[in-house]
Image (cartoon, rainbow, N blue to C red; front, top):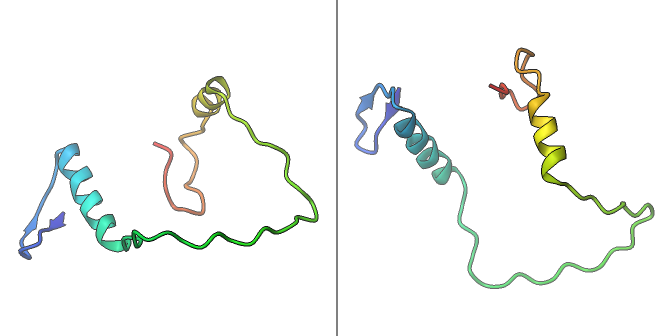
Length: 81
């Protein structure tokens, strides 16, 4: 179910319409950042520097294929399906 800008309520069954409604909703939730440049943050020395992280297509595809979609959602409450 979706509420339009005019206040009308409609049942939406088409995936494209659902995506558009979700996009409209989330675009209203977040503010647009100003166009001017931000000041650079000061450099901080880390007590324990992180190793460089790299990803490749094979590792990502392997992880996606091995998701357990029948498990409960995580802390973000999103199911993997």
